[in-house]
Length: 453
Ligand SMILES: Cc1cc2nc3c(=O)[nH]c(=O)nc-3n(C[C@H](O)[C@H](O)[C@H](O)COP(=O)(O)OP(=O)(O)OC[C@H]3O[C@@H](n4cnc5c(N)ncnc54)[C@H](O)[C@@H]3O)c2cc1C
Image (cartoon, rainbow, N blue to C red; front, top):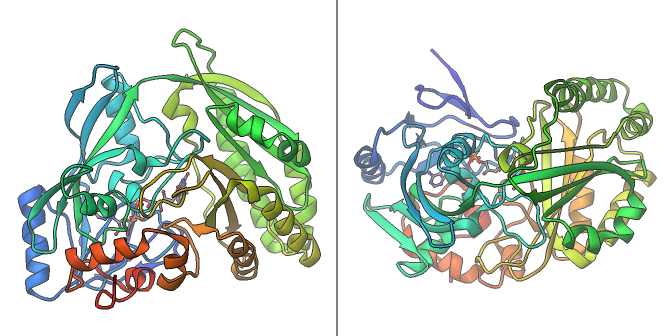
């Protein structure tokens, strides 16, 4: 029987797998769900012996074919949970977590330990391994993405051996282990630096886009986590400021208001708006104006992970680029100009986030203060013209694409965009000389293993 396996249903045998956005699918030779580390090692060894490619998949939430294989598809859902907690004098901790753990599971487990992730993205469906392998990030001008919170990894290498890597031990493998699309090995465990659990005050407020851009530095630097959504064809943005508050500041959102905002307006009504736009594309600007006018302010406090995470039920396609923060305004003006001149129907808002510069070899924020510009299109509407046009705009400011989202760049361009790219190519070639962990996507992105470095 041919069975379709979504990225969320690991463990079953399958012939066809597809990702969340249905932009990638795979018909692997077989799927495996190892129950423990020795089983994982055995599968990798078997794959290498039989000349089958081996590719791990997390929750299938990448928009690219990064997790696709025609060989052995590895689902690590049995490798889940916290393995050890090592408390540090300042109250923070190093927590070793099995690589298949989903972020929502991790958040609950950390919370039970009085701990939390320093920063998170918008959703919590991803696996820890998948999230770090593509450089998943949230927002915060003083903070980095999830990979910057990784202090150690345990990898099963192309020979089936287990290798521990950190800044002090196998540092080059560590670089690609904490952000490298699974090209140097299968992650079995990840050690994260986490912080004492904290509450956030969420303040959401509609603003004029021009006012946001005029006050950008104050907004980005003056809040722990600042981001905004901008509806194309409008001058309105929904701003979100999340800041730490004391544990005793408890001002929750009522369950009814949370449902209306997060479920009814953000998902059910938004789904209807998108369906309408796909049926009658020319009314998209009017729909966006209505959506933008419907934005309302709210303020509440909650444990950090509850504030960061929102349910996303309307399926979309996404491209996201990291641009030098100083170019954000120009980039948005150009996108606005293109949209207005073409009237391309785009009912989805753009999402703008921020990150501090870091030094991870393949981090999209490597060496520069970064603004992330994410463009989305409803899955039932064409995205090609829109994404092509904005990709050209991003290219003018040396934008770097999110490793898990749609883009058209290859190794040659990455070599110009990342100062340590040759080191990454060399490390990949040394760790996996025969391409056990390769697929067409990683070959395109990293280039040939034989000419690397
Ligand atoms: C609705 C939605 C919201 C999103 N929100 C955000 C956001 O807020 N911020 C952001 O930055 N991104 C976001 N993303 C992108 C998402 O975080 C990344 O694409 C992430 O990689 C998905 O994790 P996953 O577990 O689904 O990994 P997959 O997509 O399954 O895999 C990603 C990569 O990791 C590799 N991999 C998986 N497991 C292992 C392993 N054990 N060892 C080695 N390699 C492995 C795969 O081979 C693949 O190359 C979002 C995506 C969606 C669909």
